[in-house]
Length: 319
Image 1 (spheres, helix red, strand yellow):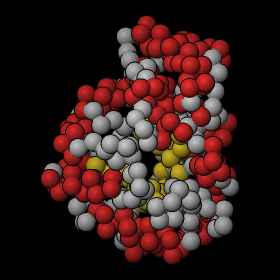
Image 2: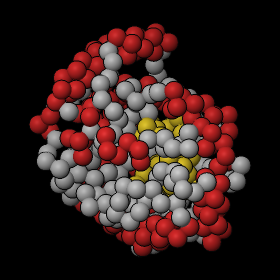
Image 3: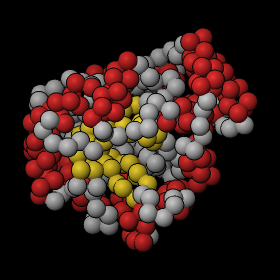
Image 4: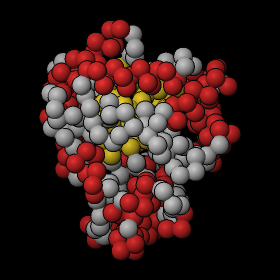
């Protein structure tokens, strides 16, 4: 599950966030770890607020440390949504993450949140491999990268995971190429935003977005596009209803059907929704289901980009 409890104008309380995390961890069979995903910048002020919450959780529930595999994104300029893969900034980022965690949980996997075009990926992965040897974290991950970048990176050091956006309304050729390449190389794909940032649950309304919610700046959530995109959600909701599942579960099951190595990464601060999302991972879609969903997507286009227009150059795939 992704921990974005601080990435909203009014962060949820520790009590609510802890209940969501604990519910997810408690749902696991013995010996299975849950992927817990955070970042150095999941906060309105792009601070380590989210990681500090994660640290408080493991401080309160130390017996849950071994039930979670902690993945954290970093590698941006401090408190800026701008990539900086210089060796100095990568070390600064990792140090900030470890400082925020306060030793409550080890950093299992560090992801360079975006590729910095100023530095070849080979150099970036080489620096991260040095950090692994220092014992700062265990594994290397990538986020928002092209298939060719994955290949280049994997020649330098083992890549444990590649995180990209995959959902029923965010599935384009570059994402397909990454999924295919990672399958060939034996690398898991962590698919973030499988619920379309909440839109694909079929329960989100414009009034739910409070002032300061980043989604208000996303073009897909603009009023002129919202009305159009709701038709996509309504059609998918009808498909889900016929199967006796929720739209969220349909969305998660569809992402999981992209490949056995594709791991949907939903998130919720609601413990009940957490269980709903986990159950979605156990839903199997038949060929007939997939054909019906494809027909819906062919009939209903999505309007608007997947991010904020002025940040597209940073948030889209880079070389």
